Length: 534
Ligand code: F6P
Image 1: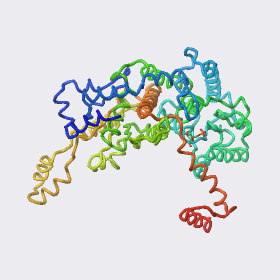
Image 2 (image 1 turned 90 degrees about the vertical axis):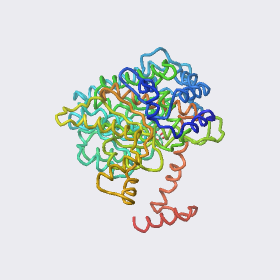
Image 3 (image 1 turned 60 degrees about the horizontal axis):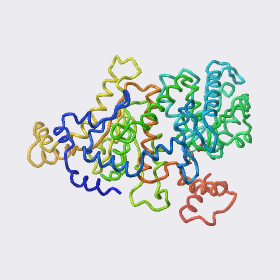
Image 4 (image 1 turned 90 degrees about the horizontal axis):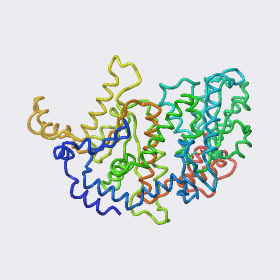
């Protein structure tokens, strides 16, 4: 399906990106897309007008707009699970009626959001108390989509945090919950058990540990436990009263769920008004995605740039590089979003893909990454397309110019990746240091930067709740477009099942309850090692 683009790529692959700027004065503006003050620049890539037109053609041919409309209309586009995909409705609870299985879903969304607002307000004001008085700490217990979203966003919006302290426990490793609970008071801590299915072994194990801790410490585990889940029968069986359960429907995928009840810890941290601004940011991106056409559509263009780099240029990974310390969990969040959604080998119709699936996503905030892995990005033999992000303004008073330095570093990196440093320049540098002959040549070669390495930059005024909502929805829709073009179901995750099943079968072996008879040699030997030392 990528023949035209591959031919175009073959013709231009050695072209200098810098030459594109020489050939077109307004390239930066032309190869950028905006939504209000949110600005995405993809001009530092090899994409030119013809390639962009071919990419947009591809999106048209693959029916992206019709598929998008089907998603927003509540059609069951998650067809391996027979479900609609309507996380977008969570950020629009007062919209026009939206029917799923013959019923309008908006009233329930509004009612749940009102209940979240109410309890968050009462917790924040001190009207909702624990056994020891005002709630001082909230512990969200969840994993994957029931952890990464609220954990990432609560950190991102730290300047807006004026509620109780929030902590996030996810790993089944007892070290996680132990370290998080050890300084908390069980009488003033609220535990939120966040699990769409309420069966996830990590979450349920941590929830039991937290309940024991609370009971032993004199807290009221009846009152001080909330549940966020689609499975009301299971929350009841765990002993959480219905009025402390915040439900949602199966048409909200785990990794898309932070906009609803799974976002309750974030709402408690920053307050209902800021949470509403976060939802409004997401909704603004939804409206833009549904109405902006062609190259004016930011999620569409971000997806097409990604597809170009991954499918056409063959770059296997992409780095997410926010120059924003508070976005330090963003790469982990995007990893789940992208890799759990589009890491598939089979197309919708069950046929094997004859192209690679979604890319590997990784990253760390700048400037820290610069002092760790940027060496490979600049001089490694492979190319890593980089997605930079930065705010024009920070939240801190900037007497010592932290933010100016941060922005300067961000812009310098994309400039360095594109411009590089030639061998001649490197030779001049070495000559200026007094080197000559073979040694000059040898040393110069180590100092060459090939350049011509692609990057995009997403720039925004400040990391507010509204902007964060825009950014997260932007990436959600980008994943949607990529999946639609690749013909995948981006909304199931069967690939996580086998490991879960095998872990359940191994647990009794590790306890020593049963002997390993059907395990491969390596697994049996590792098990033996543990049994002898545990
Ligand atoms: O194992 C993967 C997964 O199902 C994710 O998709 C999900 O976000 C996570 O586990 C947690 O699931 P739950 O919210 O049901 O506990």
